[in-house]
Image 1 (cartoon, rainbow, N blue to C red):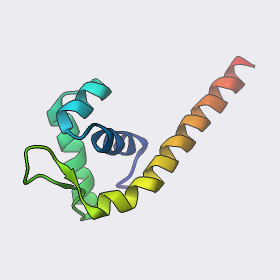
Image 2: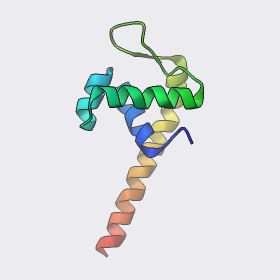
Image 3: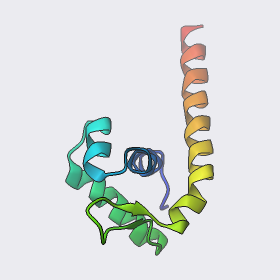
Amino acid sequence: MAFSSDNVRVFLAVLDSGSFSAAARQLGRVPSAVSMTIANLEAELDLTLFDRSTREPRPTDVARALEPQARQLASQLRQLQAHAEGLHQG
């Protein structure tokens, strides 16, 4: 399965920060791990999500098309986590 909660988090972090290194800092990872996560996601989807021909990766039209659903999924995962924590606390 190409999209996982972690892949979505990394994908959105790169979109929001504008670079693999800034996303890595935000996520507490090394830049190569972020780059590899995106490369693996692109390979699994057989889609190019970021244009790497410039200094900073630029989102492709495909990435922008997937962005709204990725944001919705991330929001739903946060809500699910909050609900579960609420149930745990009673």
